[in-house]
Amino acid sequence: MGDWIDDCLPRAEAVASKGFCDHCLGRMFAKQGYGLTNEQRGRMLREALSDSGKDFAPADPCPLCEDIFPLLPRFAEAAGEELAKVRSDNFLIGTKVEPEIAEREKAFIAEMGLEDAESLKAELNREIGKLVLPMAGRPVEFKQPQVVALVDTRFADVTLDIAPVFIAGRYNKLSREIPQTIWPCRVCHGKGCDHCHGKGKMYPTSVQEIIGDIAVEMAGGKEHFFHGMGREDIDARMLGDGRPFILEISQPMNRFVDLEELERRANVGELAKFNSLHFVGREMVERYKAEAAFKTYRVHVIPEGKVDKQAVVSVALSFKDTGIDQRTPRRVEHRRADLVRKRTIHWVRADSVTEDSFDLELETDSGTYVKEFVSGDDGRTEPSFSERLGVQCKVETLDVLAIHYQEQ
Ligand SMILES: [Zn+2]
Ligand SMILES: [Zn+2]
Image (cartoon, rainbow, N blue to C red; front, top):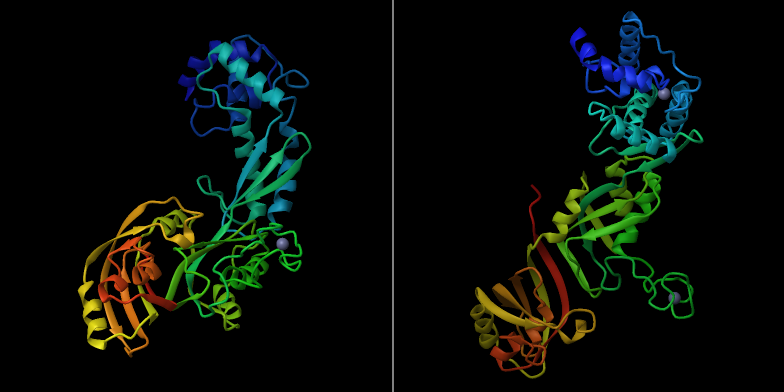
């Protein structure tokens, strides 16, 4: 153990001569002397210097840290008090060091070429963390902490940085009158105006709000954000097993939301239903957004003229594994770039066919414009159902029956 002390001694003399406290002296050699605190390390170096006839007493106050270390129990208590307000699996301590001290330290380390040093911030984080640990009643997590107690050392002031909680599940949208997500008024952007009758939004509720408002309340959170695996139009229903989504709750004071209770409460109404709720990590949001799941739809179609049952059935069958080119539809032209997308219709089945209407079930690639596949959108989708049938057809109602996605 003595070896590292001998190695460090000439440099330790230069550091100690500045009047540094044991913490700051030891920290300049933090990567030496395994298993010691900086304070122990500093004390050992000071003793070794003393043994060789060189006594350096710490100055009052320490010219580097200005005697911050005796304040640590106070910082820890303040952090412990704040953490007690939050229910989480883990925590981490962060500190805000006075910029002047941090600058001074950085310049000193560079000037003296102290390659084994660590920063005051790193030592404070660790040492406060050790003191908070027994109060916190949960382990420290370095990589993805659920809550960071940020100690501002200037004022012994603690702020909490709470990571959002992510709840995944599937939803059914049973109403053709509500959107998937909250739809702010385009005139007032949420403030409330004549256009939106003071509500700030265009629809009284949404799939997002039905579950999100309850989840925010249960989590003691601030806001909810909704990440659907795609979305259906307002007038479309989402049936079957439902569409995968992730609900993000910001600043949850309690991350241990009882998901069974949330599901029960969210399922009280008839507009939307929810199932398979489970917690996921933040990284799943991107995965859901990037997922290109196949979809199964059911559409009710009204032709402009009389149709022949046999013709409808055979046109449906003719689309087995058929590539189509879809130019950006007229109805979304104003918000999407005009380009041609290549999509595949996997299969189409016709049923309930009469002279005046019929139903189609079809499976398609993700991102297929189904209404336009049926209508042809004035030649912008090629080939289309209408084109092959030789009768102009229009989708009256659309339901999504399945999103083909399997969570790993
Ligand atoms: Zn010091
Ligand atoms: Zn408005």
